[in-house]
Image (cartoon, rainbow, N blue to C red; front, side):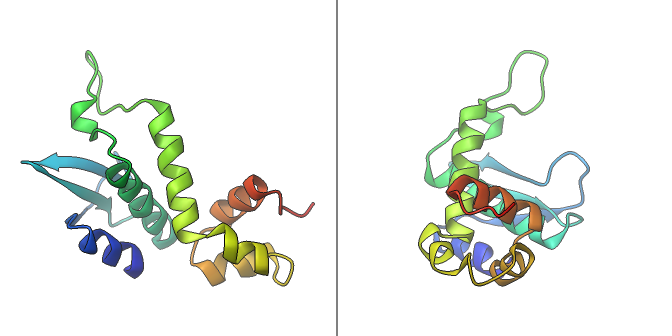
Length: 134
């Protein structure tokens, strides 16, 4: 997770860890700045992807969840924002250029380990790029 934390720090986005069963990570406003909260109890690969996803919300200038509260609802954000943040995180952690050079040399599991992501995240990324083996 270290590089995702460094990227957040470089962008001036503080990161806070919390034990929560409500979220893996969340981008919120603290005063005039954004901050990312991450669930310290989540699996490390999940935390890493979640932090990259929340960095995506910040970089793509999505409103934080506390600006998207609906009537009687908890934190909500339009689904399109989450899909965009997922694509951002996938490209940040598993760049298309690098995967296009390596996907045929390694098994899917080995790629997940090499890129420090979950097997599920790698499978989704390979499928999106048309590299998934049957």
